[in-house]
Length: 363
Image 1 (tube, rainbow, N blue to C red):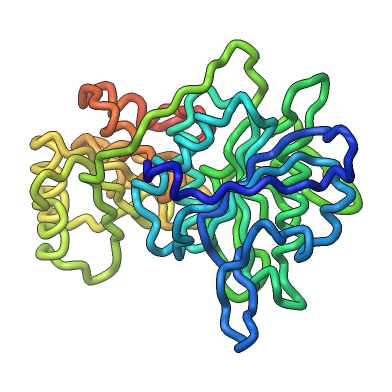
Image 2: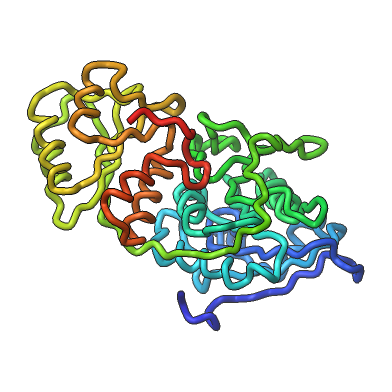
């Protein structure tokens, strides 16, 4: 990671001198939530040491909050592997010192980052809650206050000395979602994220109502480890009407390519032209893994239901079942970074690792 001295660390007291009920590490990467208006009316990152002034409700929260800020806050559109590796390392290094973690992150790539960290943090037994905002924290109608306060609530909640939430999640607009099941679906309204193929883990109203049946079980014998993502030899191929052989060839002939997430129609269907199947089969014979995911918000890939997807199944395309594109591409990066055999990677791609897909698959 970057030189640790470049990271700004601020201790925030919200306990009014009392013994804090829990400790939370707040990690600010950038994004709209951490912006405020300066005297000229321009948006600039604000000093997290003044967060109590921005959100006065925190004064009575009785939490020990430590804020750590990236050396230079980044727009989430500029997220790179180094940022994911830094986030995972920060959580790993501070894991024993805090009850939970809240990551403040821009919304555009939040689902990718949450998915990536869900794979990188192995044996996680504490909450890592991603949140952000559609409006800056200094705006009168900002959603930042509620998102941040509730994320802190969730990250600090324990029962019988165990975290209620023990996985990577996204909290946004009153809903707690499994991170690797989430997608950004809205840029103009506050309900920015949805999880069509998995129920919300909690819903915030007068109280926070947890869906305990959907939460990942607490596993007392697990020990946290983390693995870096270093391999980006992957691509996304989105199927569309009128797609030409040149488009498919240009992607599948990328030098060093190891895997492709292929976004198909409906339940996993694709064009039935022979040239299309020929290109895919050639790639698979070169040990390039093709992972079939649906373009639909909900539903799943069922290879073999229709003739076109049956051919995909026959040539060795893997079914992604109900996984999201964000989880599929980050899972692929994670598995390739582990330097496992191609056979093992293929098996693990179609097997749930962190609850990112339903157990049943159709390969």
